[in-house]
Image 1 (spheres, rainbow, N blue to C red):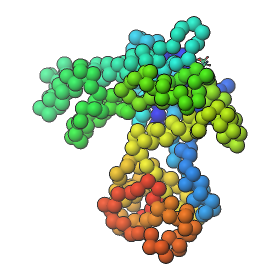
Image 2: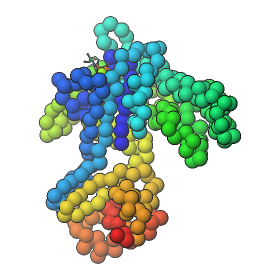
Image 3: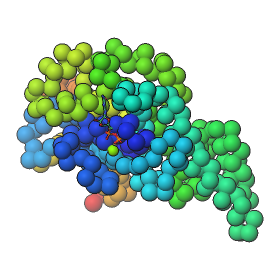
Image 4: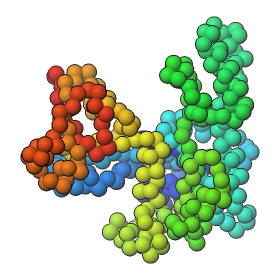
Amino acid sequence: MKVGIIGYEGSGKTTIFGALSGADPSLLGQQKQQIREVRVPDARIDALSAMYHPKKTIYAMIQFVDVMSGGGIGKGLDAGVLAKIREADLLAIVVRGFDNGYSAPDPKREAESMLSELLLSDMEIVERKVSRMQKEKASEQEKALFLKLQSNLESEIWLKDMGLDRSELDLLRGYQFMTLKPVIVLVNVDESEADEGHSEAVSARLGLKVPTFVLSARVESDIAQLPESDQAEFLADLGIQATARDRFIRASYAMLDLISFFTVGEDEVRAWTIKNGSTAQESAGRIHTDLAKHFIRAERMASADLLELGSEAAVRNAGKFRLEGKGYITQDGDILHIRANA
Ligand SMILES: Nc1nc2c(ncn2[C@@H]2O[C@H](COP(=O)(O)OP(=O)(O)O)[C@@H](O)[C@H]2O)c(=O)[nH]1
Ligand SMILES: [Mg+2]
């Protein structure tokens, strides 16, 4: 999964990128664009790894992209920024909620302005297409679709909220529309508001229609630089339950409706990320397309059962080891072993 971090100059993007990715702050700001991949923390993988002692333990990964832009409010998103977030699965809009000493924070205005810039950038693409459509040999379906997009965008409805069906979305592939992407607003608050007790009040004050996530980039980037063993105590002192990284990753999985299943063995214990609602066959395809193509069945147990009962044999004895067909809906925390016709 890829998260694009965008926002206005000085909102704290690079600081947040450091906090989320654990990047060394002294190295930040040197490249035009920063990309870092971090593990998705998962206590179940930790426990499974302790049980199997595999040669390799592979966590799911999440990639953060710090899109460095020089833009201020009203300047629009330049093509360079758009190009860098085109591949993102989730857009994180950072807004400044702390006083920087020379201008008062206005996170609501920053958020609304950035949201409308995303909308405008899609509107431009749609309008160009609409004016071209007459000359081009666009199909009737395509013409109708783009006119629908145009009128909805004019009413400030995002593409992802237009209820577009499969065939419509297929026609839009390749355009890389921004408003098809889920967004979350990261409110970068003052150190004095770093504890979670403030989150709800800050979110309520903003009153945005999109999900908001409150953090203090400065505090969190200090925490990210501590050895992991010291982090818990530091967090507790501040009244924070979990690091922004952990909370943010959890929020992202929930927003994108993602879940994890596992494969286990002496060679490898591994987490796989899938869309909630995926079938066993689709899950197999996440591992390898051939496994999906030649799928026979999935052997399944819940990681919670395995960890509770202590061994595969005990899970079998308890009647909790199952054989599932290709239509089985994979559950979060399932351990799958895919049988396929090699
Ligand atoms: N007081 C305070 N300053 C911050 C915070 N987050 C970032 N800053 C400062 O704001 C300035 C801009 O931050 P930066 O991450 O470079 O913003 P960017 O332009 O969006 O990448 C830097 O001087 C940061 O140290 C914060 O939570 N509190
Ligand atoms: Mg920056």
